[in-house]
Length: 284
Ligand SMILES: O=C(O)CCC(=O)C(=O)O
Image (cartoon, rainbow, N blue to C red; front, side, top):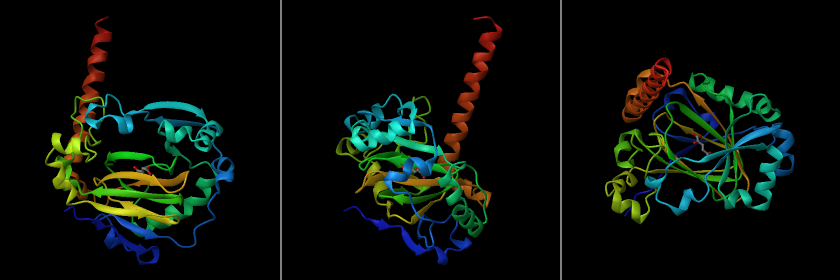
């Protein structure tokens, strides 16, 4: 039988630097600024144009290893995306407003001190803007890992997150380097079909950690930990994350598989750019 281990849930006041990097953590935040209601979202976000990930039928109707691209991108006014959420269109076509920078927005200004305090406790620095994740209940952000530590704060709705340690990367079958989908995404969803194609993916399931992230809670995801994020219960769900520097840097060595994949991908991109440059100089 599959073992289920929950991510440790502690109060924000009990967070200490010693916890950094070892394991994912669920933090119960206190004294959070008021969260925007769904009617206030447009004002709180203060964004005009946004880029939305449209996963379409890809997300559930085909095995992931057959995917030819990760998703389509569509740029639209925020008001149009909010309307898609309201009418259920976003849920139908799996449209997700992902990783939208919000530093310069009213919500960003409100949350900046919260992230700053958390970073100070962990003795690290920001490696990205604060980013918005907004979508319908039922949306699944596919299993992937990041090369930075991440803090994901939940503002509206709930999410369940399945996490796997970097050591089980090979059982999660990252997309190969030559695939169209990038190698920090897993080809596995643990469907019966997947388990026939990748029988050893079941081994990864015995290492899974699960977190249920509620409003006013934050999930710390150490670099290299694979995560799949499922929105549920209430639509829309709204979270804000930020990526952080990995301290101490040698911790990146644990991300073994991931670091190699990133490096190879960067090299592949550089070689293609070089080939394009050479072709352009040769006048082809
Ligand atoms: O909230 C989500 O849907 C995905 C968030 C994520 O991938 C992250 O925080 O690294």
